[in-house]
Image (cartoon, rainbow, N blue to C red; front, side, top):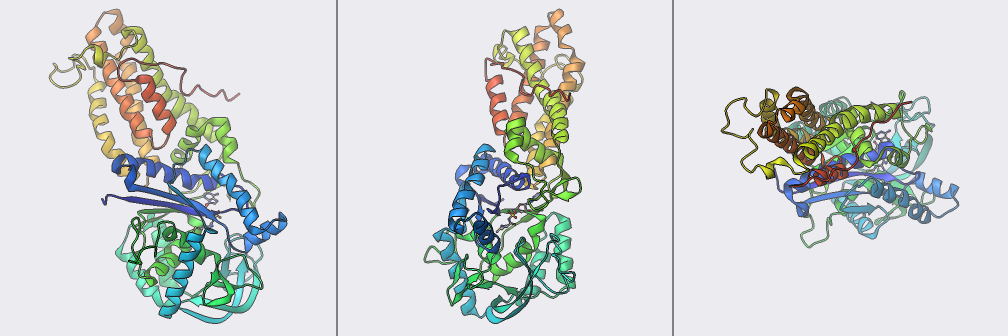
Length: 510
Ligand code: MSP
């Protein structure tokens, strides 16, 4: 593995407040960033998020709010920043496409591509979906409705500038096939490859005439036009890390990105337009673009236009930050769609958090309090824990203890393998296997009998192993549930415990 990690999220449109779908990507990215910071050190990880503020949709929303687009954007980004603070999102940089550092890079990129002959002028005739900010061919939206969101498209006929996507189609297909980890998961890789095999790429219209849309980045060689919002927004991933800043115009400390997380609805832009734009600019594509699935309510995607959005802030206030983060990353494998409901959160809460994790921590602390006066026995019996090497088989650790210890030793490796493959639910499953084994170990060992029979050494070894399991699992869950991991470490301490209230008191469904 290289010794730096650059992770990005999409830039969110700020025409409306963020919902659960938006929070999902940032939580996943945050989890990965926290994991890599521990592995690579803080200075080698860079986590970028931000907002997409240009385009027709924004201009329209601002007009409805009777504000200028800039005033409107300034007002709306507060919702995003507040949510990221509330969710403990540890981003390193937040980019807005209205910033000067971004505008400069977009204009430079346009100038380079124009000089190279990759941009040309032509008449555009076709269809446009404003809510999706997407162009469609007549054949794709034959009934006058957007094939993605189902809303009416408008007919456009105007002079425009085009970027020669088609010129790079063969290069792209070869690149994707040569880099099987570039598009993930596998289903999305297949989707893009078959799209490229079956279709001829049309060149991308990258301009809008100012007379119709003036809220955008001016095209340096075409003063009557602004840049198409997607062409503008994609470049954030390099503008934020100082592309073209130095004399050596194509280097950046962070680029290429290690992982770019997106939702599956914006795959085409990230897996087709984006690598071609970069390649045409002489810049390496990112290592991985990972498209996750959608959060659905019933069978429809959660979205403002459908009117079924759930506010992440409400969920966090009701269930807690870590519970919300845990639920999103645990309940559905990253890459697949999932159904969102409060019943599902409560189910996860009561089983995984209250019954499994919370119970293990609480009962262990209670035993340390009761049998060892609050001192973790490892420190009281320096010769212990007896379950470590050199003891007569089965003497201190009964049955499942040996297996538990062996499995615990493999946990770090299993966590690395799954989380580095962006399999967040898989990582949590691995961790929970250990937690469940530990709970079973308590039930099988029946420590209350050991106490009754004054078998202090056995009891000491037993509790030592549990304390070890708790410390190890707390470390592994910290990228997912940072505050919970801290609370556990604090309670179990190094020497003396600090038992508090149960971490996750069961939610009574009635
Ligand atoms: N502005 C563009 C992205 C530009 S990136 C250079 C955009 N913005 S968005 O606000 O509409 O969507 C941002 C992200 O939220 C997308 O990745 C999208 O997939 C994700 N989600 C929006 N609704 C979602 C769900 N219901 N479920 C999961 N994620 C979804 O597109």
